[in-house]
Amino acid sequence: MQRLPDLAVGASARCPRCDRELWRRRDRSLERTLALSLAAAILYVVANSVPMLSLDAVGHRASTTVIGGAQQLWHDGREAVAALVLFTAVVAPGLQIVLMLVIGLGARRARPRRWVAMLLRHHPTTTLWSMIEVMIIGVLVALIKIADYATVVPGTALFALGALVFLLAGLQASFDRREVWQRVEWVAGAAPPDELHAAVEVAP
Amino acid sequence: MSDASAAALGLQGCEACGLLSRPPAAADEGRCPRCDEELTFRKPASVERAWAFVIAAAICYVPANLLPVMTTTTATGSDSDTILQGVVLLWSPTGWPLSIIVLVASIMIPSAKILALVYLLISVQRGSAHNHHERMRLYRIVAIIGRWSMIDVFVDTFTVSLVQLQPLMSVSPAPGLFFFAAVVVLTMLAVESFDPRLIWDCPAFGEVRHA
Image (cartoon, rainbow over all chains, first blue to last red; front, side):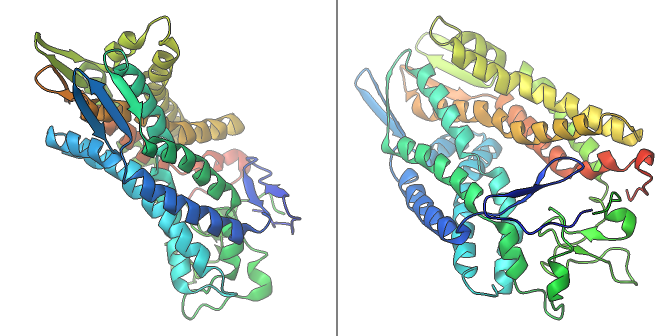
């Protein structure tokens, strides 16, 4: 257990026992978080509405989207795997972006409401299961495999997803959850002991 | 600053928001007064739950590697490939870097993950007082790289959805894919149920265990 010192912007505090970063003060965290999550939301819509890969072979032309990939697995009787692909590549990233956007808006108040705390509590789970960066590598491997016997053309969605990977990494780096936690409204009846609660915190 | 852990001082750290609080006198463990998360000194039944997920993953690991994950049907017949056969097929003078990526992500990471978790669980159960820093680093590496095993699931998904050129050639998923995906999910759940603070709860630090 340790007391966190007050940090300058850009500085970080680490656990003396296991060396994990406990807190890093970020510059203009909230504005950056809002800007990045808005951009991510737009790219997410593009990435899921246009084709990701097309294939040309012997007069056939076929194209697929991320959701189309999960659909084909479902049709072939692999419902569980289809659901996992849909969850990790579409649902979890979508929730991750929307929650971040809503948390960013809610945290603009001096004392954010209870629902901000509720969303903030569940946000790490969506990040854990959001696997767009893994999917991109998977798509590239598939693309090169198929390229041996057909012409594969990367679609707009693939580029949108590539950019989304960087935006999501930027979001992770810019959002200061500890700063929002320190201002958020507590559970009804439990008043924040102002000078005390900053002193007694551990890293989640 | 104190060398003692919060649990040894009777304080609970919230896993969601980080607030440290003293549980109400009546109850052993309560809810976080700031974010309403359930509070525990250590994750409940952490070792037992992690063991259950690891054993389930180890069982699924066998069919995941022995059964084919994809079936390719052409005018002349059909052909099924396991994960290892997929790696071999990718191996070519130009394609070998990809082959290595798939080999590492699909074969080495899942097996290393299962072995690492077994080692962490046994060392915690035996109250090991050695290699705390190394074990902590191992836990973090396992937590970070685990998701990359999903690469093969995505490769197969998009190969299947794109190569539908009936009657010339089509690819369909085979039973191994389900077991492979199960290994990835089960090992991720095992990592989530394991409480890394248990690594530091050992007699050498003079601490009480709250299992």
